[in-house]
Length: 330
Image 1 (cartoon, rainbow, N blue to C red):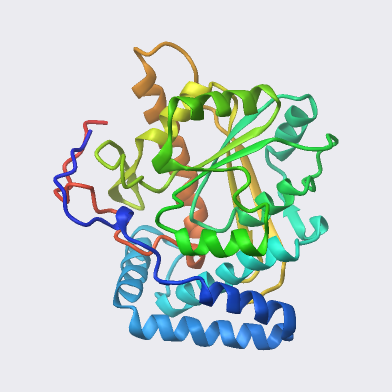
Image 2: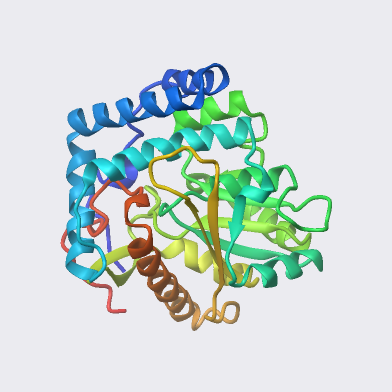
């Protein structure tokens, strides 16, 4: 495992916005302006950040160049398109919580979603691993309102999020939609009581949701190393160990907007049940966590090529906490 030698790393950096005003303004625009005008304003904001946010521009270029070097299907490097897609997604995050997307606009693919629904209908819980490729927020907003196609009246849910990094967005969303942080747990404030909450959620037939592609600022010294798009990259050790400790069936879940740059309020959802074993003795826990992470990364690579401009990690994804690129032996 890697040890962090200090310094300001990407996983400890704050969001670009320094106040809640941009999010509250977006909410006002969605409520009072026609959709075409909201689209136009969103594109203008994306262009502004593309021009004046050097890191945003640099890292979108880095990711797309790595993807082009790895993928035979990705040919055109268009960083502005990726930044614009993120701006549209940010607007949709606000929109789906204040004006939920109709369930019929969520298009599930012929994958393992039927297994997950069947499991939830039986009152059995599951552990979901999501990512910052695409947007899981739409499905979470529907789940909070019990509109995910399950026969039960409600599905308990716990969502892990770095609420320190996105504090302004979280604060604004909580004011606009009272249920936004109702089931969220800050990844930087995990205590023994947190584990009890997680296990109770699973026993109640609920969902525990965790991102598999972000490092916590307080847990960044320990990572799993896997090749992603042909280059070694660090992945969160804690997310996969947590899945092993919970010992519930694991599903990888992705949500992608239909059309990169249009507020169509339509989403393609993918649900893949993990084949890797979870749960068991402490002796082989690291190995099980690493196997689960490797499986997740293979799917992440596939969807990154399928939806290349919906990648929303605007930092050097391949930079290790100690910046030396040393592998952990996995």
